[in-house]
Image (tube, rainbow, N blue to C red):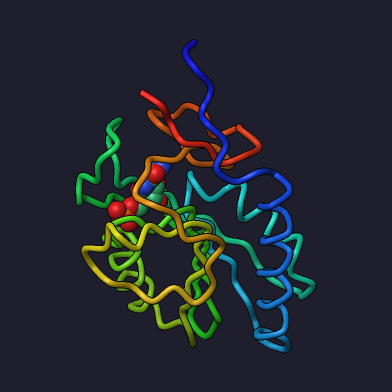
Length: 173
Ligand code: IMP
Ligand code: MG
């Protein structure tokens, strides 16, 4: 099975950061029709924890995208694999992403969503690798900035493995 990924972010560190993000989001969106848009598959765990940390009425939608092959490098090609179930016109949409790497996925998603006439579109990303930016995108809420390492766990995969790790770890070759 190989060496387990080396821990970068512990479950406790993740949990306290997610709670703080939730509180901030709840304060900012009070009284608004908030839609949490969970970008599958990578952000399923983050979105589940974040949703519970936001003490507001909200809707949850899922959008399936694929931007990676089974490699650790971006293909630059974004494919929608599952669409929303309801319109988002007039809503305040918060895109919940696992990680912003090159920014290609997020900039593409923003464009696609803006065409559906939501009132606002903002971004909440669990992780960000600033050194890898190709297309700069504004991240309104960020969990953690990380170095240019390939991470897995807490929803993030490598070739569909490791999503169920309760921590974020660095994959060692
Ligand atoms: P971007 O389009 O390059 O910003 O890539 C975004 C997507 O690539 C994320 O939603 C992840 O699915 C995947 N990704 C980028 N970096 C990593 C990583 O370190 N581990 C796991 N997946 C990653
Ligand atoms: Mg992925």
